[in-house]
Image 1 (cartoon, helix red, strand yellow):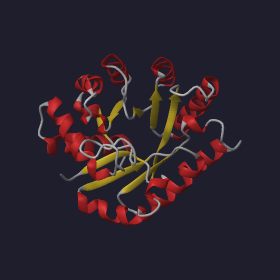
Image 2 (cartoon, one colour; image 1 turned 90 degrees about the vertical axis):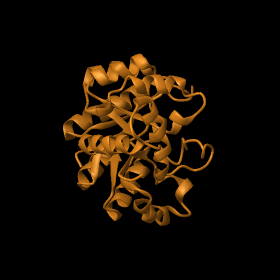
Image 3 (cartoon, helix red, strand yellow; image 1 turned 90 degrees about the horizontal axis):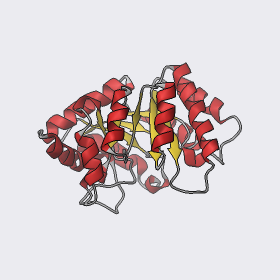
Length: 254
């Protein structure tokens, strides 16, 4: 496969510390044409901008994940803003959103963090990368309120929720979860997403598709996710990869 656009990756993650740049040097030879680096913290935001500056095919987002809610410096929003404005390689605000899976993070603080960054994205005229885990109702409420250009990444919701996101004019991103044995819910959601609103991603180093499940993921593995998606859509795998690549370029303004 070629022309792969991994629309959500975490190459600043410690899982890549030993061979980060060796791997990034090789990815284009493995069919990867574009990568979007999503940020989880202010540290990620700065490091991702530096990685994107090194590679023509890599772009980055500036933002803070909900799990960082208790660890952000007071001026976190200024850092996110300044980083977003620092380079034309910064194409989005993210990943931002809500995560109610664990009890240790205040929902009120998460909502405040999410809204602050949604407002910033609107001010900067940038799309958003949205993380939503076990928080569908509140996520949809805020997306309907702010109406951002955006993608709900690593989609884990229902087919009905996928329809609501598409109605908002947003994109829906799917990972290697599509290849898992328990992927019925994700596959039903995928079936409801028009191909022109579909993005493929790894969320690497996480979510490696079968047959690599449990191992460190990288952008080249999207070929397996694409094969699972293409089967649902009744399409050729390379055709779907080409379409989702164009979707990613259009969404991120590349």
